[in-house]
Image (cartoon, rainbow, N blue to C red):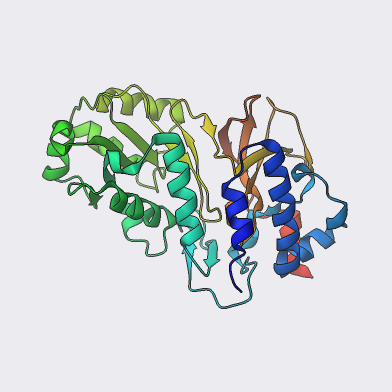
Amino acid sequence: MMQNKALVDKIFAIRSDEDFNEAALEVFRFQYENNELYRRFVDLLSVNPVAVGSWEDIPCLPIECFKNNKVVSFKQEPIDYFQSSATTSMVTSKHYFFTTDIYTRSFVKAFSLFWGDPSQYCILALLPNYLHQTHSSLIFMVRELIKLTGCEHSGFYDAITPELVDYLKNPKALGKKLILFGVSYSLLDLVESYDFSLDDAIVFETGGMKGRRKEMVREELHGILTKGLGVQSIASEYGMTELFTQAYSKGSGIYFAPPWMKVAIRDVNSPLTRIGRGRAGGLDVIDLANIYSCSFISTQDIGRQYDDGSFEVQGRFDYSDTRGCNLLSSM
């Protein structure tokens, strides 16, 4: 399959809700035609694709389907896949693709919208758990952003080294504004051993404890990190193996999505029912950059959306499979 360049360009040119709705409907019909698993799911719900007139009415595929299926909207053999961490389940999700061009375009454009041109930064990435995962979408993203910084000091760290500590003690020596990516437990290890004054640096906390430490609520974790690193707030990105787009938080755990991504909240007791803003429920993600997989995903996250379109993630469901995915597997 050749790329649908016109549709891809349309996705990244979205400027309004009307643009999003038009592109979402086009992607939905494209995926209904080209994604056998998703078509079966839509048919199972007795949804007529022609009758769907709004992105809010498009069915969202349970994210668990990525664990045991190739969720693809293309015919040729995938060139590779991204794979989720195995820390919470023996069965991991795989996101198959035939090109990384769209993923790269998505994260570079989203990063630039929220943070500016990557070339103005030096990126230090303390991501030891991820560095050993050969199919990590996070490592792929950070590696490409590091290249775009053009900074000789940018790079990955598998552990807290004297060189990393020196850079963090004297960030002005880097010659550019600092971005520090760090998995949560490594950042805690860092501030327990050293004190820093990173001032205007941007610190991204990502990844959780990975079984290395007890889990902490976001407010407690970010409170420790802001004090130890000497920054005003801790940034984070909301992304996952099954998506091709990230939403970003500049602090307080409130996320904003780029124009080609939206979230909606579903009733926890009625997965096909959407609820209003301000109420907690299951998080559905519409990621139009995920055109050759599935752009309409029902996640295991619990969250809340606000009037300006921003959202927060408040936890996860305590079950591993949803009825929709179970029905698909039994067909």
